[in-house]
Length: 237
Image (cartoon, rainbow, N blue to C red; front, side, top):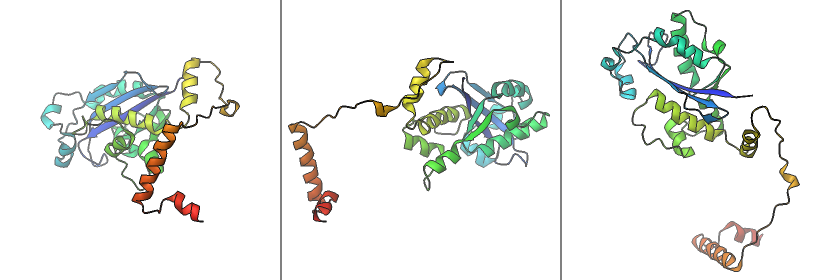
């Protein structure tokens, strides 16, 4: 069965959909079986109102730039068809889903969760994986080795692309071998979960040169800690 996921991000005129703030940009990146397909969706939207000054500092999208862009009603049908039945991946999902729901409500469309196959919040995932740490998108990019050097301002499509890389890295885990086997087996094939215990793994012992280099490193560590290294302490017990 093909797993279709859409990584989604929005930029808005402000922070409160309930108080009339609107979506000004939406960026979506498609994953099929955890692989980028290039079938992305990106629109700038005329919000029919100006952005708050603080929001402008975040996304840098001027009110003038948006004047001739399509209104949300003009892109809604395409967006709904694109999202339908997919699992949606969003960082801080309540924010973006709240804005989408408000836009859909204005047009008499159903709420996001009734259209899609599920909503996955990577901020919730990150807080569980890295408790007590900063878990914004930039922090996760730094922690997971995702290149975000092109991100000087927030942009919906760029942020969705970065989040796709972050999500793949966050969920790679120890199932990478099984994923590779599943992909190589082809769609519809039965996949055997490999029991690694049935393989006899060779033991590669260090040669004399490697053993001497290792001993030298341990000696340097022992000297730097003034004899308080773990192996010295355990020898004295």
